[in-house]
Image 1: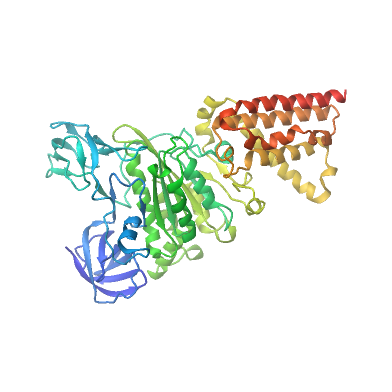
Image 2: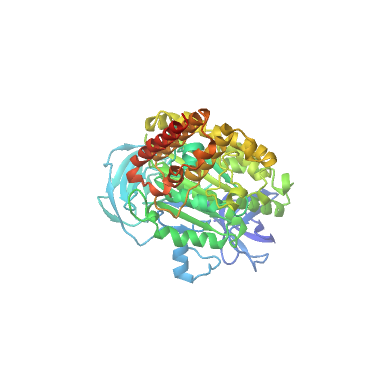
Length: 586
């Protein structure tokens, strides 16, 4: 066991001597309280340590004890439904143990040590196994069938395995004889370095969408399973609200929500709300497929830096079981600010706006761990990452937003004007983009072959409307010909009836792919039929005054998922109303 002495302290950065036997990125226990820290630099016999807990009152001369292992995450049954801080301490256990305020230096094992899990063996004694081979199945929750696999790097022959029954996480449940090493004795959990990506067999094409139920995302700016997306926006534009909706409604098997440096009241809303929510597919509590990491702005700044790697390590563990995992990181800007503060205390040369020169590489380390993969067991799993970015003043040219764009292929730009107009989600259809459209087009064609051309046409109408609005601001709408005023009318209906969505409306909070396509078809058929009658001499004012247009605007609220055939019936009535209007002017 390595033991050193603290020589100097600069906020969360501690310098120590006597750590020559330790290694880079090793976990250490710092000071008399044994605070959790990580070695981030060796220089001329000195170790530089990043402390992840409040080290107020620590003094030079206190000892540092090495653990002999890197900063690691405990992976096993019991992660689902848990609420952790950035270094994987279970907050509910700490609250029961110490009250509402975290005590410095508290050590609690991340998984429930007393609960016995009923397991079913899937291998027999004498069987040759390799990494990723299924050993046991555990019913972790009613929604998640936990698959205990041979850990990475372990090959050999099963020499012992326990029979079916209930076991605790520390129980030894199997042994693997290895030809080139000592026997490996496995428990129901394993330690894995948080900063190290777990191995997989191969990357797969990202050809299936991560369905969110949000029309502006699924139809116009979709993300695939295994994709990465950024949600940039200034204060009050709805980043956190959008991520909450994605966590509730996306069709991922597992949700990992990382509150990284966010305000305490926002995380309180998550912690209070999520346990009460029902999963829309199963009707079971949504916490039965969710892991929460709460690392708020009043917690030690260094812990923000490790929290997103804690979350991604958990996500990779479930990905290896063949599950689709979605990570919500809110917000990567607060994480980058932690990097900037720590870099300043390390006296490193600053780059843009004071951020360290390695900001892009750290962002890449996080986002590159997303992807759709073939696991070592041969199953298909994926990790999708959706990271919120909080540019100061909504300035998308600042470094975190710009570097994030380099590593993400989906950009959901939030617009302050839309948010001020109470248009939610406030995702700008002019500034946002998705590079996954071509990859997932084949999937959407199974829903409706017209999806891509309809999507492209609606986006074109919205872009034409934006250009016309510049003219309207100068000369007013009455100066435009009726054909162009129709574009303004159609775009206004598209915004109200399709792009805007209410989380408080039972019929509107989620839209299935089929419903979205049918709504698009109705809106475009209205535009085409209205364009035809206007060319026949019908004034735009008569089209605008048609009573049925109010039904079109309200269809998202009045027509439920169970009765989506009514959208086609409404479309027929819209065409009939326009045809009757045309007949009046013959």
